[in-house]
Length: 315
Image 1 (spheres, rainbow, N blue to C red):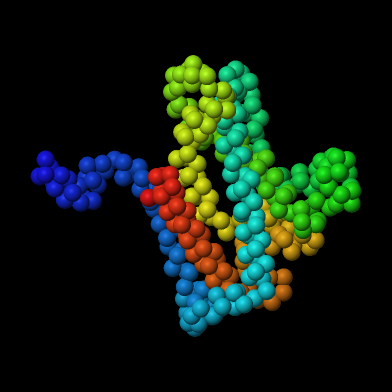
Image 2 (image 1 turned 90 degrees about the vertical axis):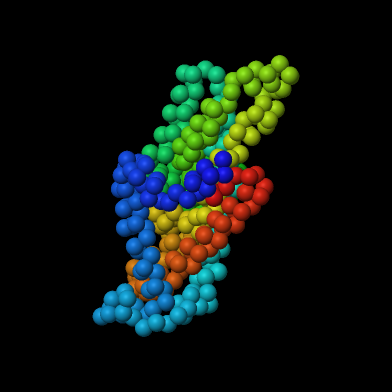
């Protein structure tokens, strides 16, 4: 027994490459893709520590250390972009993350297969709407005057009669998060529905015999099955907490709501493509590197807490 375990431990990567070479060949395109587009660009991160020189290129500028990090931390945009990014991400996680879980549980309660497929189709469709079309829909439906949904909210006195839902800074986060939930809730529920499909039907029958109602069956049967999946997806979401989607924010951004819509990703874009002056490549790289470091810290911290509390984690 001991000799067998020792032999198994002594096997190197060469053994597994030879043993499962067909699987490695299938995996090779993905490895090459990740190496070229994810790992090779990391070498360019040194631009965050150099003063960009157009004549010398990315790797030829003078070394300035943490100068651009300090410039960003001391700038007025640091607190603004960090606060806006955190608020949007936090609101997206607090309100957007549980939505597909609740939807998956609701769909799983439907026993009529025809109605179940119909509901799933309806809630999946918004995911296939492009961001450009989605923002265009928001501009039409929530226009200050004549917008169907904005007039409806005003008629119910949920928002003031003179509210500009797309132009006032206090409404930007809710418009962003709400439209995101509507668009992605159905698609994100697929993985939870798949997890619920693994529940043994006999558990439901046994619970009914014991007198458990629908809510008790959800709490004691379905939710425990979803916990490992929930924690994995939560860790992945926390690992990109500062990566608020650039495209949607940029398209929804205007001069009226910019105070609450200027996030780190749009700020980096404005540094790289300024309306006036030269592009600040080094500062933009420093801001991007800072974002990735913070995301990594949140990823590791959430993974650690998840493993300690639930026993589930990425590693």
